[in-house]
Length: 248
Ligand code: MLT
Figure 1 (tube, rainbow, N blue to C red):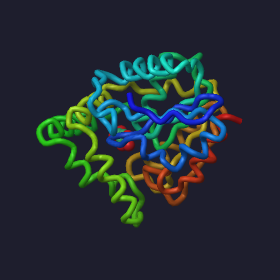
Figure 2: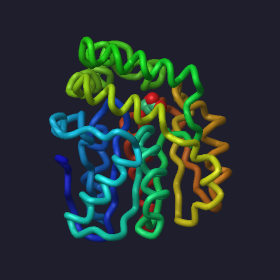
Figure 3: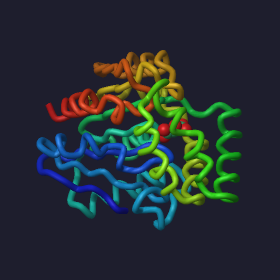
């Protein structure tokens, strides 16, 4: 897996969402590397890891990430995930709770997909296999950002989305569709956790983020009032500060 590996200190894994790559964390990488060893991979099927074997499930993907961390000499780590990356953080915590020192849950949700959402994912998967990820680069940037987001932000997102492979989009869509409900796990989370949410998120409603934050014992809630689904790009400094707290 191609990854950013920068800085020294406790490890902080940054996991991007769908259909994105590690460039969404561009603003956070350097400042966080002053305190952490920041590890930000391009997940298989995205960015520079586009050619790598794809996971059959989020559990399998979590297993590969744990193997990657082993190979880098990292035992314990804090994990921050954006949206699909947050689903992976839950999978990592299920697989290896003792290795996780803290959690950053950014614009993500604990609930599993509804039957309608699963059907929509399968349509996305089939279309991506037929024609590649280009259609997502047309529709998703506006959905992922707040109303009135600057055009240059949408322009940054399109090439990231086009850099995915059709097979990658399909595999991760199917993996997300099959993910279990993490809601029952929330009350058992016993590591410092920050929930970061965009008040203007069109994909994860504010009420759902609020409920997730309340369900995790001691979780800190950080609202990004001007952000949609990508607060790390719309209010980068606020997200950096929120994640910096994982090492406090
Ligand atoms: C993401 O940003 O990773 C996706 O919106 C997650 C999802 O489709 O559930």
